Length: 326
Image 1 (tube, helix red, strand yellow):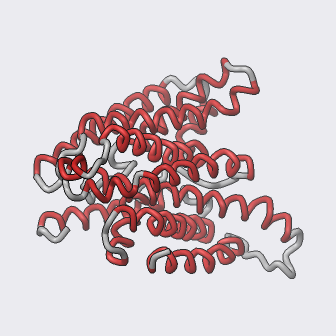
Image 2: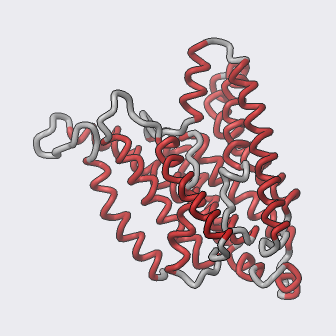
């Protein structure tokens, strides 16, 4: 475990008990009635889900930035999360026609399918073009915008054709991203998928290191580009799809976290994935605790809160890139 991983692991250990106690009503384990039930059935699954979703998004962002060699790469900005959301929204329609035993699994399966398709489209369009050239960054941006726009248009169509106002409200709220009212069932769905996705990304880590030398140099070292592409598609699809399937769209984590972690590492993808996963867990856990504490009439959606943080951060990165400091 490198220094960055140890730092964020310790921080996560400190944040977890604080997250369990924090909320509109703070929990006193000794004085609050039914404190054990509240902690075990409400607060703990929500905290575990925040850790899992944050880890998946952080690891996916680090892997995408390493693969595309583009510091602005992010599953949300480049259409991966919107495609996963499109698959999940489609499940609201398909589930009604399925037997109950299969309907419960339609959302995670279609979210995973959408995320994998989005990642595959991005890889095929933007490929492994060097991000050092202005055209490469423009290509990444245009490809991501195209995928996100397509997914957004189809999602809007699904919303427009919603069968009733209740379904419409549920879809819109779900797209904003949240961990409200999640239980151990959602943990059981998302955690194994995200863990498998992070494991796949770790398998690809050494190949990503070689890719930093350039595609030709990586191939001369025995790296198979097709195998690496398959690993990235599978890893990012599992991590992002698993998170979207239970929490909706939670953006900018994969963009913010690698930039915060990178100065603490040797900047190679293999050194960045694990600390980015831990830092992503910390970020989502803190953000979820914050939205519970804010004195609002209704709880602020987690996806909205992180977008309010992420959008200015993205602008900051663009300004740094313009000045040649990124």
